[in-house]
Image (tube, rainbow, N blue to C red; front, side, top):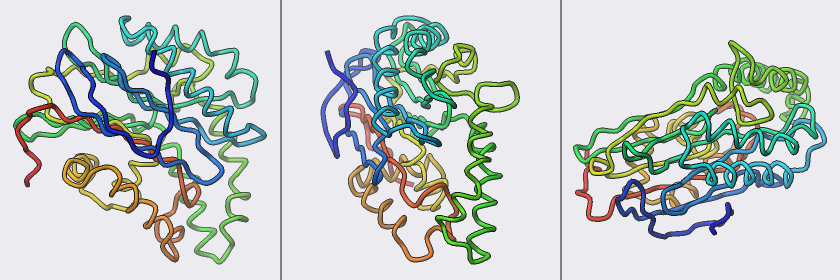
Length: 292
């Protein structure tokens, strides 16, 4: 059976909702991180973004948890979205609870369901769907992004005041830990971790396979192209660029933008680099609708 894996770039074919799709997958680990996971098989395609360690967790343990999450979700892909996520969390809880804050990851899943193709999102991974009329729709949860705004604004203030990036990161470390400890609580944000209550907060959308021309699933590290660097007109524009240019080209552009001089002060964010993972599904024989 397929297992979650991390490859620089891979192309394959998969069946989803009874329709055949060409699949392009890109995984670009950040230096000293490599915490994302992805899985592609018939009837189930997913990205998991492992949460950055804040204390003594090894990145390899974070990726192990993200992979375990995808394996357990795939095993329950025939269940309802809430039950699929709840049972997968219960199975992986022992690994998550070995740390404080507990290990966690965010998810974007596309799976075959009775109503066609179902998108399931938990946390700040994103799904973007294009239909055969050229319309594009984004499915994402903004709660984690809102929580991160405060620490990112503080980072910007410190670096613009002349404090080094390393010292600024240390200055906000306690805030990040406090935010993580409040994860999976009301009025905060929800992730795949040790609390099965998160299953009640998944976003889910159903789409007809016959109408889908393209589908993008990605981690927030890849979504930086739209969200942080404004290299596209939002996430729908990023899907359009993925269709035209391919994931490898956009991955190179992302790393180039991250390396630009003054990049961290011009585009405040957590860390110069982040793991960037994306899966692009393109319907076989679909009409080209990427023009503006």
